[in-house]
Image (cartoon, rainbow, N blue to C red; front, side, top):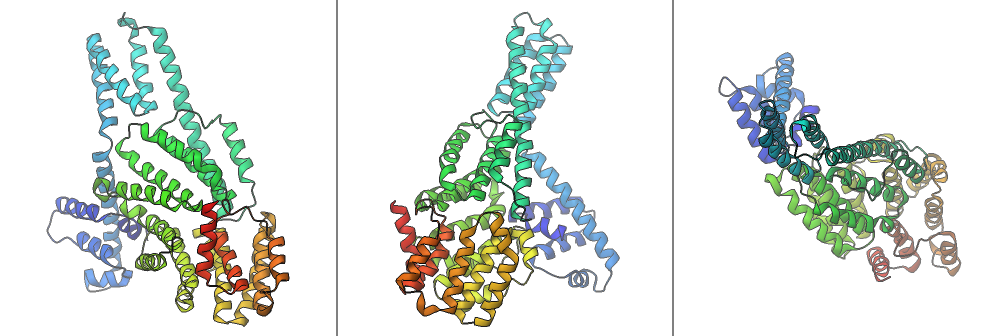
Length: 501
């Protein structure tokens, strides 16, 4: 599937460019590599179907050889494309360094140092610590030939740059370790105190949030902070840091390949603001994100479109624009895309929207698409996603009146996830399922004052402002049963109340 994944990630513009690339590379017209590319890009076919389209028989050897050649061509094309874009700034500075060294060998010292000064200024503006190291190395090497150079100042600059370069390298290592830790928590269900690991790792590598860093490194730092919010569900604590850091980023002179990090950063902030129920502010960042997705001939549009669509739909849904939210997600819910996790998030969110709208048959049709095992979904979307999916499915079967299925699903959930939930101190999820089970067994009793009091005393609420919007959505279902009100209206009331605090 690697070839299909690579092709699906190409934008329309890149696909057109690649066909032109192949046409120039091919020695004959109507070559099958272009046919194969167009077939894969246009629609999903099985290997046998593609083979017959190309050869009118089952010539598997020729087909696999053709796939290999097409794969190699795409790698060549991607590398060529990157070299073309790649950063005229970096390339220009490298040219300056090479030219200056030539002039130094020729004893044209003043000319060489003027060129190196120009290179140094450019490299400093773009936080290119590795290239600055080469510039200072060259300046120091030939300093004895230039009496106007203050060698002590030059040494200080060199040492300071080394520290910055080392700091950037250390942050890259920290980033890798933290992402690895999060993967173990999210996708393998390991029990780890994330905040302790985060603080220990930052301390071990001498990273401080106040350090001056490159665009990429500040993005990595923001991502680490965002991961902390994800694990602890405390987005309020991280919001000020993320926004202030982003304003720092905007002061930097960006390079062409900073665009990807820029979009990522804006998405992180937009998502944080949404989780904090600040929908208008989140939309402002989402709009900025969309504008950047259109830059450079939509270069990163395909990479981010699902995340953008989903977050926009979530904001619409919780802003009383439910029909628009559903319509927008229905358009993308069946797309074939390399971002499997976003596709799963879209479908799960869509099922919640349907349940909130009392359209249980459509919600049920979504769950029929979830035919893989929980283990598979844990590997693709994480254990938290799987737990949410199971709880939502139990609620759906209660609404559909599938009592026998509810019983088996609850027993299965307890058997598979109660131990894990206890280990990560998520007693609230256990209590919640207990109330859901009580409702389906004794629905008439949930409107009693005794049941209401039991819920209030058993739940450890974090306060409307801090409470997670998705936790609110689960609670709204119970509240709607207690008060015999519309689920969607009850959900909106809780969100609106939180926004006023």
